[in-house]
Image 1 (cartoon, one colour):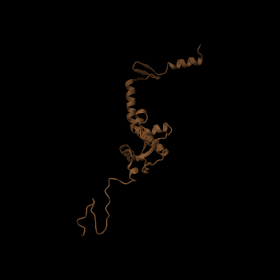
Image 2 (tube, one colour):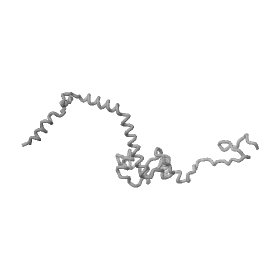
Image 3 (cartoon, rainbow, N blue to C red):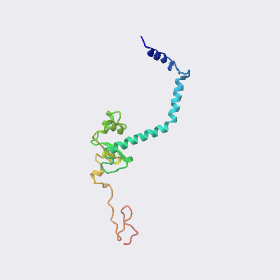
Image 4 (tube, helix red, strand yellow):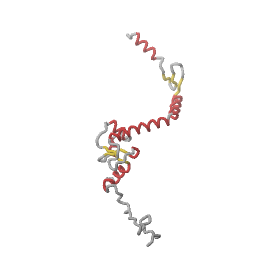
Length: 174
């Protein structure tokens, strides 16, 4: 036999909000249709859209800075330290396979935090990361920082002036 307390609970549950077909009956007798709810949430979405985007952007940035700080905060190849240029890299490759197997790798920083900063990752700037992806080795590591495709810089002296592009200046005295 239910106690008095249980009976109270049973009686108050009947006064809670109930659905009757497409109409929601509230405690005060208000009626809400599914269209009313849809309109409310649509208006709410548009009203707070920019604030939510800004909040999400700041949250992602804080998480990125936290992860970059944990893994060193500078590009392990060239030493770049501006966070806007830095990204995470799988040391031994395999980022594509990692993205296919895990659902949360779309946002790598969240995955790294949730998995307690696993080893096998490094901080690289976007240039070094792309070069490592395309050429398998970054130019900073293969040429000691020199651009292997650059033309040699011509020497400039008073007797033999050189025009831009390495051509002899035709106006120079001979």
